[in-house]
Image (cartoon, rainbow, N blue to C red; front, top):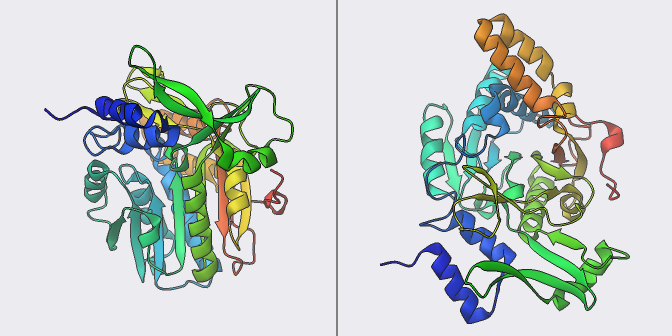
Length: 368
């Protein structure tokens, strides 16, 4: 009988003494046989993303891309890219809105989806089967074509593996995953010499017990995307829950069918995520302009979501109108996703204007 994911992780820990929290997180989410995203679809079962809340979210993302494309001089060919596209709802809604706003946008357009989960890829194929444009799938951003690019990443970076470091009386130590006496997974502390200088630069006067999170994979992807935008032109729209300031403390959480659970219990049965440090991503972006992060509610209001909702309600029955109003509130109000979720844009410098939804004062200056 094949060993379970928990057994394989435990065996690895016994051999090595411990494994990185990022290693544990990657296995729990993407293991081919038991990873959370490899078995079935969690969307709508354990959580609901903004594109699943309402078509308006994807429509406005599509219109934002068309607006940037127009300001760039309508380059062709152009790649419309989504990282972690879920069911494909955002891309489907974006393409429909884009085609309505600018039929010319589809000329020379190719869709590229970066998706590691085979089960989600199959779902995306069904959703986008009649998209009317070529759709290509990628395991990583590195295989994306070298063309002008319009990229959207909604709730993608929060699921990328994190490393955590705690300040102790002995200095900085990495929080890693080990085994307790009863065989369950637990956090243990080990040396962090290779990160000492970076951690000292991030926190001037750390208090004992303070925890800092870094995301090497997220930073690598951000560097790659910004490099492509700088070289070939385009823009990237990043939407996720997090903060412009570095989050303080351990933000790793696990969400399963019955709500939040302990992060190290039963790997593969819960979604693991952590707050996105947009400031860190902005600081590693290359030769591009960075705007934001700003609250999702503010961004969507500026793009006209209130007016779009009103238009939809005019053509809806009473029950549908209530659903539209509920979805609007969830997307833009503080008690919903309006403040917790943030939006950041990276744009190539040939755009030469502030992208829609952002103000000059919100250009990132390294201090957010």
